Image (cartoon, rainbow, N blue to C red):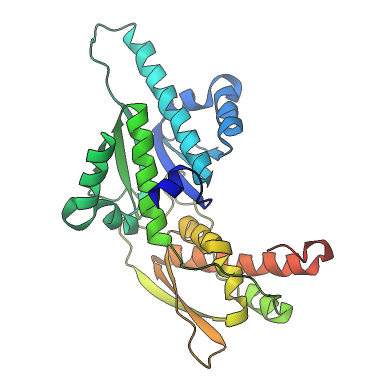
Length: 299
């Protein structure tokens, strides 16, 4: 699986977020936004930087795995360039490592650490990078910081392995073809709106409720013939919903004789609310798509 991911053969859309100080953000943006523009164009990834004057900002990188790796390589080499430039004005002789801080949902940190720390040890040994998973959640968040230090090449290899771990956690076996949906059912499902507070209203840097909100579970029932809309080709859509909401989403196997499938969403109330909102939005998108004659052959 790792070779597929590193060659870009596994064209799954992922979202990786970084936590950066103001000075680091300034370096990534560059004069008049030229550096970040170049990174977007050359990597093919979407790179968004959170607004606000707080000392730390979130940089979100979204795209196919190969685009994400290119963006990370450009960021890592830019930071190394900054270190080299700062050393020309300082008496220090040994070059400090490049350091990046990833923001990872706490629910995924267990997979990253592995049983008895086996996975994180394997990543350290195979990449040569230092990897530390914070013990505490970030303020007002259900996520943790994962700090990666090393040479740019070690950091890129490390990010590839972390993406592999995330993809393994999200893998859905098989490919799902989307049948022509029943627009009436789609419309009904799309109208089941969940009260939804847009993320980011609490604090600009760390959306969420309290520091450690209790996890809960919510169940949805979806008609069999519409489940493909939610899963997407090779699981791409359900993976996006998991990534964006931070919730765990499990789809039960089809029961013989049943026309419906059970979806179980686990997470904080905010995670669950966002997951439901995204699922409903997906139904609306598909309903709109099937209403357009020009889109009938797309999925």
